[in-house]
Amino acid sequence: MLVKKIAILFSGTGSNLENLLEKLHQKEFDGFRIEVVLTLCNKPGALGIEKSRKFGIEPVLLDHTKFPDREAFDRRLVQEIQNSGAELCVLAGFMRFLTPYFTQNIKAINLHPSLLPLFKGGHAIEESYASAMKVGGISVHYVSEELDGGEIIAQKCFEKKADMSLESFENCIHQLEHDLLPEVIVDILSKK
Image (cartoon, rainbow, N blue to C red; front, side, top):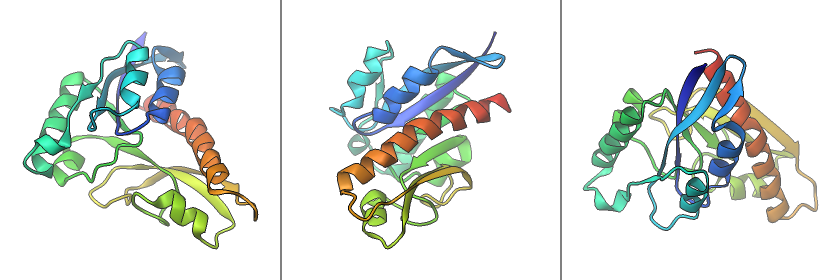
């Protein structure tokens, strides 16, 4: 059976990492099997590290603070991804601005917790919640040199209720993420 290899990059709790490992790793789809060949974290002590280990995958830990600059970090990051043989890289809560060196060498998608092009950056959930918009949502997009600016692949939204707390808003975001991201990955790989 044809094997499609992916790399997953994360920085924090790893909830999306864990979801992807549960739904995709070593699972068969229409004519192919997905294998997560690399998980990589840039923050030592991130909770997602243990989640990766739970699936028998020892994550590569690349502490970005140990590199002289962004490009030096990205060069090592690209090397790790290329060495893994991954044909698609998934940013699942990977909180780094990536340099052109990365974007020109790696095919990657990113999960973002807002309806792009609105609310780019690291405070998207809070900004979306505080906005006058009647919906909240998520986007999966290709990674480009512009922060959260690559071509949008898919989006999902939910109705923002008037009395909704930030916590319940965030929970709705995460539920959509857990549904949409695996679907997008399978769809992309099925077309390769």
